[in-house]
Length: 280
Ligand code: SIN
Image (cartoon, helix red, strand yellow):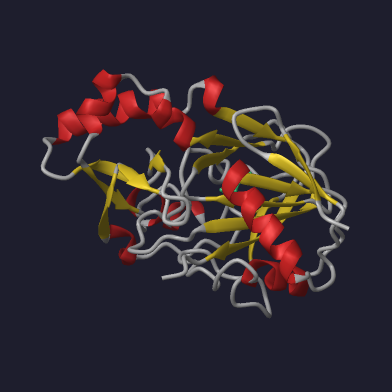
């Protein structure tokens, strides 16, 4: 039986059924999932009771594990982190800024897998913004400002010791975030780049980790970043994902931005996450 894929009808995203992720997948199933992932950019798999072993096995069908800095893995695992918020937690929401995972790395992860374990009764949706679509619909004027530009990516704002998740934040936060001076390192990536597997152009990177543009004055960079962010995240490019327990979501970091949302005060939220490294 082949897998069943239902597009969200929004800017990206599809739901996948008729596959059991708690058991090894056939080559045909992996190929179908890969093709759907490249086409829809965000796939959700509802009703999939999965262990961390299952999550790791699924991840490795699509590439090696990514390198996940700054957040300690859960006990007994090297490649699984917990996206966690306790019911009474007062820290700022984790990952609330639009971003694509670890874009400050030389070779950022191709994708991310996130598995819902404890899901609040309301709120806690994840938003995804389709960056192929955002580029296709971009005005010629904005595109001309971005064409050929290299963006500077850095983890400084969130993960430096004085950053948002820095030393002053650690006590209030249930997630084991480990800020470090490595967060000051910078990496350049083209703002408009071809998806390494499909060749389709997309906007890459966004406010969360982009600090400016190479060779541009800081104030000019800031103004262009603001204009770009407003465009990239217009409602018409966004898919709002609603979670359920035992649901796996995988997304393509080369195609979409994402961000967490709140609205579940007084309720706990726990998800386990792996990243899919780029095949180089
Ligand atoms: C993440 O950015 O990995 C977390 C997204 C979320 O918590 O919804």
